[in-house]
Image 1 (cartoon, rainbow, N blue to C red):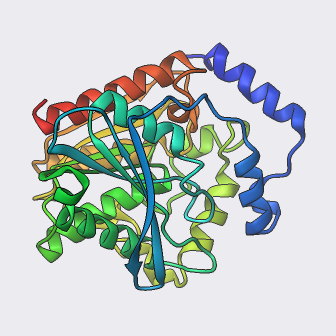
Image 2: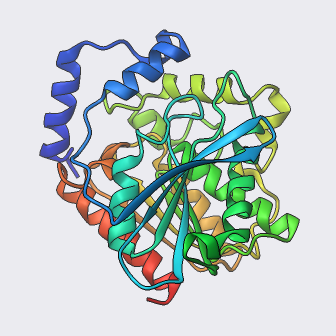
Amino acid sequence: MALDPQVKTLLEQAAALGSPAVNTVSPTEARALMEARGTDPAPGVYKVENFNIDGPGGPIPLRVYTPKGNGPLPILVWYHGGGWVLGNLNTTDVACRHLCNKAQCIVVSVDYRLAPESKFPAAAEDCFIATKWTSENASSLGGDHTRLAVGGMSAGGNLAASVALMARDRGEPNISHQLLVVPATEPKFDTQSYLDNAEGYALTRDAMIWYWDSYLPEAKDKDNPYAAPMRASDLSGLPSAFIITGEYDPLRDEGEAFGARLLESGVDTQVKRYEGMFHLFFNLPTTLTKGAEAMNDASNALRKSFGI
């Protein structure tokens, strides 16, 4: 399918700004560029709280979104995108608010340590610790620890899959579902989607190489399943998954390949490709028609996994 006209307009507007590519500036400058990027309007949520929990590298900031309703409510632990280098609680605020309202669940957003200052496994361990803490403290949040999902976009989708693997291997916490939005699943840059979408669609091949190089301290880490879930030898016994991909996203093929491997391993998995979409479309449910469709689909998948 041709590039969606709504996406084409956004890309033309972004090109007119003339901002430098993230991989050509320092991490600090790249973070400022991401913070300055326009976002959709943030919908209201019944309650939003910010606090910190103890982590191995210091406090881990969390932001908890609670919908109106009688508890105990199901919980989604959410990890932001940004190539493990960029992003924070604010850059994923809009998505968290929509998911909270539409899926009628508590959303716990995790501000994990960033690379290159904190390389792998810092982000993955922070996300695991935050998820375990959420399970253990679910009742104090008004939540139900037996209905606990993990999710994220891009690098956040990678971290969600990694946490699901960690939880399976370590025996806790009990995770019921994975919401993997345009996930990065392995540092492999020669797939057809990388070749077709290397330039011109917001996320570039060069940027992804930079992100992976910033995140992984050593070459051997590329085969660590907690860094690259696609390279896990065994994907059986994992929670159900809904995987979202975009046609014009360099990460399209690895997300779909991961979904195929989950299915082969007996994991209840749905993969949906959104035609004409680029990497960032899920974050724009008000601007993009298919962004709204993906947000609704993700919320419905969560509700189904939660039994509501």
